[in-house]
Length: 298
Ligand SMILES: NC(=O)c1ccc[n+]([C@@H]2O[C@H](COP(=O)([O-])OP(=O)(O)OC[C@H]3O[C@@H](n4cnc5c(N)ncnc54)[C@H](OP(=O)(O)O)[C@@H]3O)[C@@H](O)[C@H]2O)c1
Image (cartoon, rainbow, N blue to C red):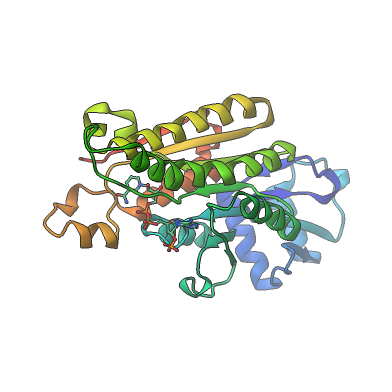
């Protein structure tokens, strides 16, 4: 969460625990308006100001009636209906953030406060750009983008023809690239930059694991390279791409596909979601070029 004083719009102060308390206080007093602004008056304003803000801004900028923008982050998520996507979506919603979720079928997303489903096929590059533009037009910024669309295919080098590689490139790399590019362009123009989270995988980092899933490993290795390129280009703009590389995630579809597997070694999607929130909006924001190998006990 970001607290922004209207008279000093370039000053951002991040106070996760404190803003949580302010938000609770304010939401009792007055519900957030649709655009994310809260107006607070008199005693409540003074309390909030004295408790949390003084020291961050000079006292003379304090108005009697203080309008504070409680800028819950604007979080864009693709693959929000997937096994991991559902946990990530809930993680950000529970943090009070606005989530713009790209889905193929609106019926697959429940109605929930703070959740804005958007119909998108990520294989359509023009539609991806439009998705980013429309999100910015409606919400003003994109603070975090979590690009989760992806797929999986088995196959050794001998089993894998180029068509199989291309199919994996499409689902894992093209899906990330076509959204990451306009997102990067947008974040580069924002005073506070932004955070992009991409999902890699262990086989892309470990050829011993990769040899059995060649097309998948190749496509995810391009995701790693994309993060490197974003980080090189985004360095001065405070735009950071993180790669989260999980081993097998404990999703309903993995349980269905591998009924005899040992689920205990799998990665809990809710924990991955927490990790993603940590690198995007938590203390992990200070990380640079992170690759998080979420392998657990596997
Ligand atoms: N599951 C694992 O064990 C595991 C391990 C390592 C890495 N990963 C990676 O983690 C990410 C999430 O995995 P997951 O298990 O959550 O995947 P998943 O359950 O298969 O979900 C995939 C998501 O992508 C969406 N999608 C697919 N094609 C799309 C398109 N053309 N346009 C828009 N949306 C599209 C799906 O939407 P629909 O609901 O419409 O189908 C779904 O929301 C992927 O990148 C995956 O490669 C997964």
